[in-house]
Length: 216
Image: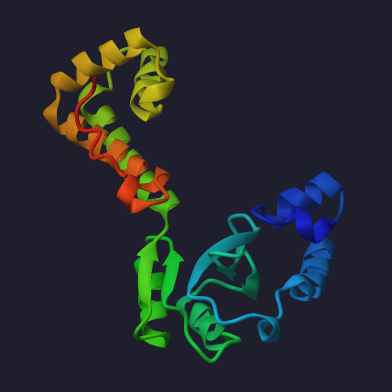
């Protein structure tokens, strides 16, 4: 159970929840997690894998895992996230055939390391980090051009910009429309973020109905 609780969370927070020593949970994790890995001999080599880092102890200790993007099978769990440690993890890939695509974050070092080991593998940025990049650019522009008034006003502006349009009230949409009309740069960033969200929300590319670059 403890190992299952560590999925998507750092070990320190799980240890606190279980009232267990961090060192004890870490030992359990490294003893038991490999037993939960999918067995390569029972599966064909995956075409697309996700390369993610995770926190063993947030802010201090990290590891990386390789997961099948289609089945969710975890193929490797390795301690450390330096280039050398990631390179060693990739070189221990349990299949003869390298994946066709690796989905990972926007860190240049991660992508470069993948290309060094698997020269013909495509490296794709995962959608979470792409959306995060656009969101940060939007927020930075808001702060630079509209950082005025009260903290409450700032929170209101953040909500207008970062909430999916369908979730906003009609009067909020109207307020946002007027605001964006006054700032072309902010408007471009805002609709770029909405377009990216639309692309990721659609499973079949043929179903895409064009851009959201005009607000109703």
